[in-house]
Image (cartoon, rainbow over all chains, first blue to last red; front, top):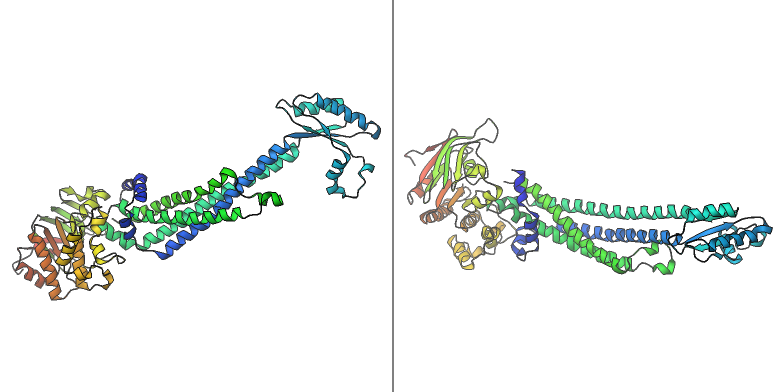
Length: 309
Length: 224
């Protein structure tokens, strides 16, 4: 057997055999294989179901990373600390500086209630905030691209000792990093699911081909070309992979759609889902499953035909 | 059609089962191939339809050196060589008619219902067209195998101990079909160790008897 001869099993020829209308003869020469048929359908369906969730996870974490990155980068906070008698003057100085800072929006001094709300998680609702040396907090929206956080920080240090600029970088970086890692996990899960699907379909195809060794021998003896035999098996397993994956995808999408509304609970997990055009993405899963089934069965058929002259 | 020139073959390197095989099978010829069990009759037939490759010498079928055939080339060769095995193999999930028509299916040719009916009638299997192979008797299986072997109208029919499991009457019935084929111009090569069968057929058709002995091929003597 020359390996180069198997190049005759060209993808184009297999594809034509796969989509050709005259599948009757090709379908009938392969005996019905109940076990491997059910195995392929089930595994393709289960993997597609999991793939839909992995896809939803990847998309949700992408949205989360974008949201955290954009929300926290749209404003900075200036904290002003000083002696009680000079606090007001320092804060006013900072407000004056901020109002003349290029790219900065209108600064806003947080009132006592807002500051109390921020501290409540640490001190509880009954703590008398007035009695504490709480710094003034100024929220500054970023209005233009020419805003220079580092320049502003240096200017505040120089002109108003006790004023500290916080551009949220310390908070933002680990959050965005965590979200990006979750997204990478989602993508890795998708790749693992694809690889596991390929392995299972290949095993099922190999089992079917091995069980049909005599059929393949008979077909070769009566003059069947390799491509004819390969099409018969590839066609069957590709269709099964696609049908199983389509069912799994529909179930997965339905399960995602039935998750609690993200606005209702507000947590990250409830944000797991699709929105807008991203609902179309899961429809790629059966297509990918069919391609995986196609390539896996072609490989298994090549291996089997190597042993038959 | 089939030309062997000093062909040799061994299943293990250095141990030749067949050697110095020289033979020519031309259109309209009827050859018997005989010899004791294990002498290499089946091996010689397998060489003829490129299931095995010679380890020495030159074997050409329809003018093509089998050693140089691609896998597709082998498939094309087998469409011109009908083979009937002793252990006839069918696709048990298909009815007899579909098994017989299988060479048409795999070569992409449409099945002519009328021709199929005639063919099944010729091998006397009309009433079994819808039966499945496991339900057939030995003789019926052999006749179905013969019908499958000739459905593509091959130039050569090779039969490997086709009557091995059959009683005398059934054996003669099958051989009669092969004789009829031969009379239409097909070359026929039958491997058998049944000398009585050879004698009975030789009474009806001019047949050559080749004997494999000691790894070589000889023309059988006058006793046949």
